[in-house]
Amino acid sequence: LEKERLHKEQLEKERKAKGHAEKERLHKEHLEKERIHKEHLEKERRAKEQADKELHHKEQLEKERKLKEQREKERKLKEREKEAAARRHAEEQRRLAEATEREAERATAIKKQEAAVAAEALKKAHTPKSTTTSGASTSISGGGAGGNGGSGKGGSSGSDYQKKQERTPFGTKVAGVVLGLGLVTWFLSGKRDRWAEAQEKAEQERRQQWADREAVAAEESSSSTGGDKEGNEKV
Image (cartoon, rainbow, N blue to C red):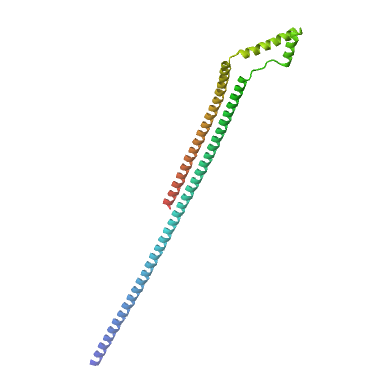
């Protein structure tokens, strides 16, 4: 009986020891599983963080690229606007120079015409007018010899006119020439003034058109820039 009791006690001890060992093994396995699971979660967390960083970096690069493209577009647009404005300014200057040159040429032509008219008038004033013709001279000669009475009368009339011209004072002739020159100058100056007014009006219209085009171009540029900026903000 004592042996059986001791044997039972021994078996119980072995059973308990075996159960304890099994518990420890299961506990170790559980701890190992938890460790592996934690490592897996840590790897996933790090991988997600890396992916987020790469995505943020790509988004930042894309924003910088779009901003650079926008600035390049604005720069090219400003350059085109400057070139267009320079071309318009050069064209306006060329037209203005041509108009000034034409005005100078016309003024020179008018002055030459006035000088020619004045010279011709002075020449006529100093040169006595001959109203007798060869036929009239013949008629006068015929009248003195007893020829045609009518022709003699005509010759006498021509001679009277010539005598009147010779009796006209030189001062009166000069006054008439001056009056004629004044009338010619008045007519030509009026014509020149009308032409100058037309040129000035045309120049004002060209400047107004140029200013309108500048305003339209500025408005289009402002609208285009505003639309691009709104698009960038949405992105």
